[in-house]
Structures are given as C-alpha cells and as structure tokens.
Amino acid sequence: MGHIKNLDLREIYSNEIPSTTYLTHGIHPYTAKLIPHIPRYFIEKYTEKNNVILDPFCGSGTTLLEAKLLERNAIGIDINPLAILLSEVKTTHMDVEELKHAIQLYKENLKESEGKIFVEFPNIDYWFCNKAQNDLARIKYSIETFSSKVDRRIYKFRICLAHFKQSSLTSNFLSSS
Image 1 (cartoon, rainbow, N blue to C red):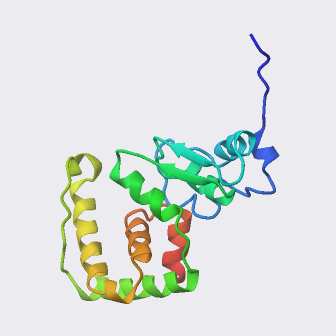
Image 2 (image 1 turned 90 degrees about the vertical axis):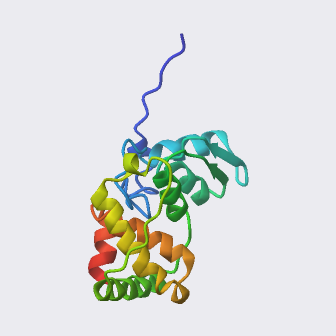
Image 3 (image 1 turned 180 degrees about the vertical axis):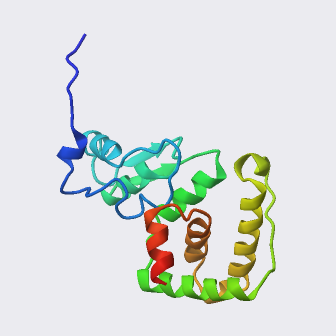
C-alpha cells in the first residue's frame, strides 16, 4: 500500500483562500459542504485552464466556484432544487452596487405588500417547512412585482439571501442596504 501524504490545505492556500466563507462561499450554511481548499487542491493538481469539470453532486457549488476562479469550465448537477439555486447564484458575477440597490428596492416593496406567489414542485414539504414556504411566497411576490427593475440574476440572489439570513454574507448585505 502506498504512503498517505498528510496535507494541510488551509496552510497551503492561506494566501489564496483567507477563510472558508470568502467571496460567495458563505452565502448559505449548506449541510456538509466542502471547504474551498479541497476542490481547489484537486482542480489545480489534475486539471488545466479551460478544462471541463463535472460535479455530479454539486451541493452549494463550492467546486463550481473554485473551478471558475481557476479558469476552468464547470458543470454542476444536483437533485436538490436548493442546491441548484445556490450553485447558480454562487457562481454568477454581479455588480455589488447594483445588487445593493436591488436589495433596497426589494426591502421597501416587501414592507408595503402582503401578497404571495406560491411555487409548487415535487416534495416541496420535504425541502421547506410551512413557514419557509410562506416566507418565500411573500419574497417571490415582492420581487416579482418589481422584477422589471432588476436583473434576473439579482432576483435569484435575493431569494437566497432572504431565506438564509444565518450566513455572514447575508447579514452583511442586509445590514448595509
């Protein structure tokens, strides 16, 4: 049996990856997500720029984002609709000022309205409790009523931020807008 090498990936990437929540990695406390150091190590070791990387269980998109940062093309697949949304949002470039402005518009619109748009998909009760479904329906209504004023990428980003207030990135955006 070969020798197993002990790697301290946090030490190896201490300059490139300041924390496990840098950039959009902290957008959501997704269960059992990878620290970004792990996919970065394997992407650098086994691929080259412009290679295609497939992540068949992409979860919150950690591998997809690291691949993008390292100039690789990445394809992510997941059965969980939350994972798909998080991965898309996490890997989409957005202008921060435009995003802050859209969040402010959204918050104003949400305060003024009690409307709801419910979304139906198989097993929704498995993925979201009733309160979360209700909150998301209010958020969706609020955003849809002014969606012509903002980019669809921001709409998806806002859905993630509104539902998952626990993350540090979310708290920063909500408190600063």
